[in-house]
Image: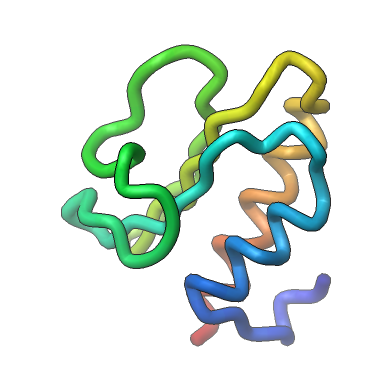
Length: 88
């Protein structure tokens, strides 16, 4: 994915889910922490174990993952999805 490609919140979630078999829940939140797309259980400030976040002034992308996730790679994917959201 390049930053020239734009994603809607729904497309960002689909793209992230396609990259990892161990994503349990995923959501895009607005700046206030309200769910724009994805799992409602991730609303508000990120909490709990196995949670990764990429955040900007406009969005948060939040993933709760299992033990088999490659967290460094998944974090990079979150940052790429966030970048594609921000371009839109």
